[in-house]
Amino acid sequence: MLDKLEQQPADALLALIKLFEADPRSDKIDLGVGVYRTADGATPVFTSIKAAEARLVAEQETKAYLGPEGDMGFVHALMPHIFGGGDPSHGGRIEGMQTPGGTGAVRIAVAMAKKAGVTRIHMGTPSWPNHAQILADTGVEMVGFSHAAADGSTDMEALRTTLHNAQPGDAVLLHGCCHNPSGIDYTPAQWDEIVGLLEETGVLPIVDLAYQGLGVGMDEDAYGTRALVARLPEALIAYSCDKNFGLYRDRVGAFYALTRDAAQTTAALSNGHALARASWSMPPDHGASAVRMVLTDAALTADWVAELTSMRTRIQQVRAKLAAAGSAGAVDLVPLGRQQGMFAMLPLNKDQIAALRADHGVYMAGSGRINIAGLTMGNIDKFVGALAAVSG
Ligand code: LMR
Image 1 (cartoon, rainbow, N blue to C red):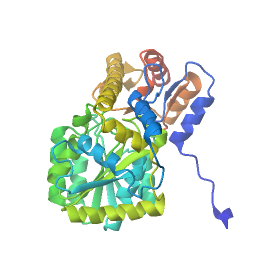
Image 2: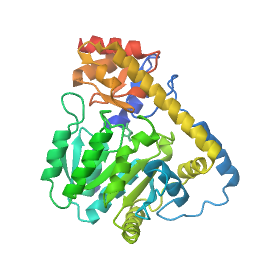
Image 3: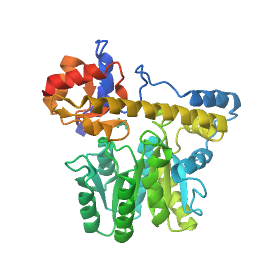
């Protein structure tokens, strides 16, 4: 029976990690998978997380099961950072659960939307490749619209048309900030318009907020999410702590639902718990416990904010330096200075991307996406030179 299974290709982005590791060149540059790197090219554990982990080892008394919702102390400690202070639960209309990474949260959001009757999800393209895979695997139809316009801003006209033509039972998947792969985000005024369109059309928003704090700031990066939950009756939010707490392999995420009233939210979450139970039963505890410890200790929270701020500043500096270079061969680098977060898309073809890897040791996704954080003040010039060589 199992001989019916066909060989599947390895995930192209994750396969790059191994290809890069196997390359012996000392001046190779990794612009592939989305992990933050310091000016020295390292991805260290946050000092605030290290301190929390030490405390966790010393204080944790049991590793007995928690339940499919995971660590609710973690889920609630995140809420003011995502939804703002005051009453982040909006009168009990927002509740959440812990998930294995942002991927687990997207999975719960899509599966819950499907259980609630959603059959089609509109999604700006290009998007994070795993979005389409999750939709396909969950059995929801994906309908694409163009995310970015020719002038390098968001394609609002495509989104307006999509929402106006949407049918009952449709949802739309939006990137909360730091669009992956383009770095092209909605402005606050555009988010306000999007909320109005969603109010008018009744399309259910699913927000993927995976890079909060790595764009403009924690509050600024949550502008769209906060605008949605302030005005709409319903929304689903997938959150990742993998990047902004540097917990990638620990898989730390959360899923939140906003519904019309607290009783409906409880019912919605019970569906999330059932979906989790049937998938992974319970999320891994360690990373979420460390985040809870950071966010419930003022000194550790301050350390975390400082670390995140320095990461964001470095990304902004690299973007500014690339933009200042103007162009590299046929590639216009100026728009990179206006974009946000870890990613940007370069207009390169397959051969140029292959030549960058083979001839210059520069690794990037096959889509032309680069991870800005893989560049340092020490390797930008080499990167710009390589770009010019393959595209000039
Ligand atoms: C990325 O886009 O590089 C990250 O989100 C890692 C992943 O899981 O794809």
